[in-house]
Image (cartoon, rainbow over all chains, first blue to last red; front, side):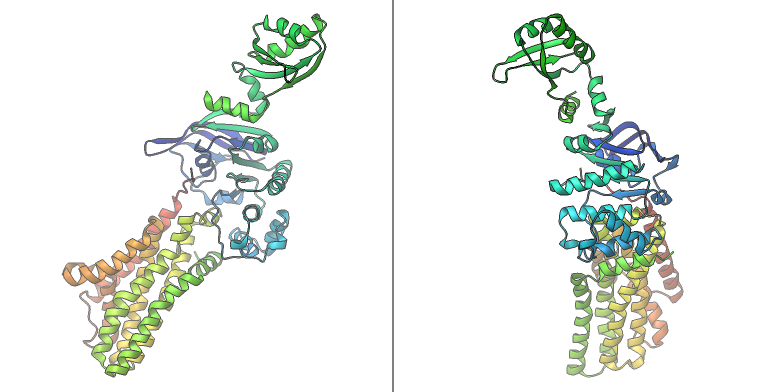
Length: 303
Length: 239
């Protein structure tokens, strides 16, 4: 069990507060660190990785300080966002060098290269690699010592869909194996597809934490949108609008459906089937039309 | 204290094609000039001393020192690839010490060796001039490498500052302001060279004891400080 604890961490650069009093705990499994560009994700990841000192607060891995503690890297694998690597080396030489720096040898390097399926290009110079190949070699260098915590800063940036899928599979596997995997992203669908758990950072603040559907439900003051089809849309609309859990209903003639804004999630989900039953209306479709991270996120950003 | 993997990476970065060309150009120039002077003016001890002192020790050694010293760490910090060294359970001072050894070795090979060759071409090591300046170049290589490695660790503009120090401080101020010469790696190494040559051709403004103390102090302090800086080196994000 590896737990990364961020305790009341702030970081400012001059007058600019990049990270503002964030407390979170990252446990085993895949966690997505979500936020728009400039939200402080990289600053936070740099502090988690021991490359930046918090201005206040502490970052610890299973109780051990991360900052100024190079022995901690026996347990941490880091995949930085920046492209620069030792481009004049071949992939194999690069991963081997990383293994040696951990006191390991060629066997560990080869295993890591196999894990990321880069053996076929291992003898080519890194400068000839595509973005996705670079990313995978970076992964191999981070995995070479079998770390229990893996930190990845925007790992999917610039990858094509196939490479993205491969990396997602790999990270999912790492999470399933019980490692603590944290990756940052500003792309909602990436986080939605991969993360078991999300931490949302907006403007340097910790905006939300948990399963993204749960987070969504917690925000009861935000209208939830549903697309509903029934055998009598207008009668259903009339019955629903009478209840305070519904804020607005639009009859979408083109779609042949109702677009409903619910302000009280819990109450509305209980209300809808009851009202339908009481009025003898048959529900054909009930689908949340914005249960995506995109809507969660834009709400959080706007708030 | 010395990590062979860090050393290998540093050597390969330093001796990459473009940098190796720059490193090789000055020594080649020195040797070409030495050949030309010898052919045109014949062997002359004073000329040999002037050329080795003025061109080799005063100009070439510090410039090679700047390229090797700052190049051993500066580009890695600039482009962020140093993160692959920092994210390992290796003591920061070990990284610095290893890079210092590499920078010293490269500076010595590209400055002291051509100085010796040029010296033999110029006057066949008459009055120990070639050996004296080679010793000076070897000694200066150590101090320059340490100094410029520190500069590469603390500043993004290390090459510019390094060249300013090497050319403006050592060459210009040194000749104009007598006091500045006391604080000059070149003068310290000349003090050692003076001892080796034993003649009057090689001379320094600084006594041997003072020079030795300052050389050791600068090397040790610069290396220690670079290690400390690397311990708290922060990698800012790209945001």
